[in-house]
Length: 559
Ligand SMILES: *[C@@H]1O[C@H](CO)[C@@H](O)[C@H](O)[C@H]1NC(C)=O
Ligand SMILES: *[C@@H]1O[C@H](CO)[C@@H](O)[C@H](O)[C@H]1NC(C)=O
Ligand SMILES: *[C@@H]1O[C@H](CO)[C@@H](O)[C@H](O)[C@H]1NC(C)=O
Ligand SMILES: *[C@@H]1O[C@H](CO)[C@@H](O)[C@H](O)[C@H]1NC(C)=O
Ligand SMILES: *[C@@H]1O[C@H](CO)[C@@H](O)[C@H](O)[C@H]1NC(C)=O
Image (tube, rainbow, N blue to C red):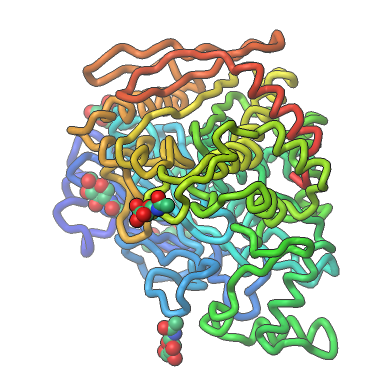
């Protein structure tokens, strides 16, 4: 590690004479020397380090490559820009095509010999946006008594990360997932210099980030490349996976909209690479799936390319083709579907259309059965669905919210848990986040998708300006402040020891419930419920839910 006294003056001198050797804010990586920033809290942050080359020009639509070497020391005091998202304004100043940056937070008293556990967190955004960027790792590190390291990063999304040319391999599929693996390789090669243990990496993620965890578990047929050793997946989903040839319409439509239809495929791709990012952004919106009537919520995403991904998620987990991690947490929020369902849904037809638009391969018989299973008694009554306040709306919205929530989120997470148990990943823990926030309840959202995220990082550590709504009741003086302590207590214990109970301690408040290991002796098995006010207890997965999930797994519409 190099000593940069001209930049850090007094601080660096202090670390030289101090009897405790601390991690130097200046870390000399192969790509460059980065100078981080020690904070008053005893944590040092390094922001905006490149883990891959700018994916622009000839590198657009290519797998990530190594960052270029930069000889002069670089201050690591500002986040990098986030990746261009589908539907983002072409002129946004927050995002850029040059976006493959990573942030590290480490206790300042760590040394290159500390071997601290590392938590690498993958943000969500439906593979179409970087929806939870720049999360501040200091809350989790404080909750761990300064004994872990936190890494967050951006990855390509939308066409930049997930365009394919329909299988003819000039544009490799799944580049956004390849970015994520590149970040994990960066951690393997570099985290030791920050005080981290590359042999103890816990992979975290929310929503599409949690889907990414599942995808990395099954990638390359479940090959274990030792990039991560345990996983903690929040608000898991199984994305709808198209096969590479099924995505050709996306490529053709984008090329057409950009005026890039060429005489040969190379001409077309050359034209696409020649467009400015602003020109691409102007055409970066979703179109309906073939067979759908309206654009789906998320169109761009991982595809089965018979390289990285060989199978649908249900099939891969069923066959046991996944990385046998040391330990796992999987869980979801009670009302995972509520934020996605259009408030105006007021008929059975609209419910079915919404599902068909997201899952174009669903059949009429399957829709019939799904509507039977999720039928809610008040669905037939006419509700007030034009009201901005969604609670005023009738039961069709609830029915669709329950169906979509379980189809996309709850049942995939339950299926992964069951597969892990079946294949003897014994340290598997399941949870349900059921912390009711008054405003979210008043908005008719129940306990919505990803609400545990603000609690996990701590409400003060969610950046503003990116549209993440932090429930008011999670803040230190709020009614759910204890729920924050609870999730941070269990997660930091898990990150440190692969066991959520071992180092758990509450800073005040009620003692924790023991989070039982799952024991696969058939149903019912138990999961941890994080409840309103911060209480925790174990509950059984009810038979109704497991039966519905069983049907959804059998159907497994391209998931
Ligand atoms: C960083 O390390 C490289 C080789 O590992 C070395 O050549 C270079 O001089 C170092 N840079 C500084 C500023 O110490
Ligand atoms: C973006 O900026 C360009 C010029 O810089 C302008 O022509 C265009 O209208 C802007 N687009 C939007 C959506 O603001
Ligand atoms: C750093 O300081 C914290 C809090 O004072 C302590 O708990 C921890 O053990 C220290 N870590 C190292 C690596 O010295
Ligand atoms: C993270 O939080 C700490 C403590 O509030 C603050 O000092 C630091 O600047 C924050 N870092 C970022 C990147 O926002
Ligand atoms: C629906 O709700 C809106 C807003 O609260 C209200 O203005 C309207 O009168 C209501 N319509 C019906 C039919 O109740």
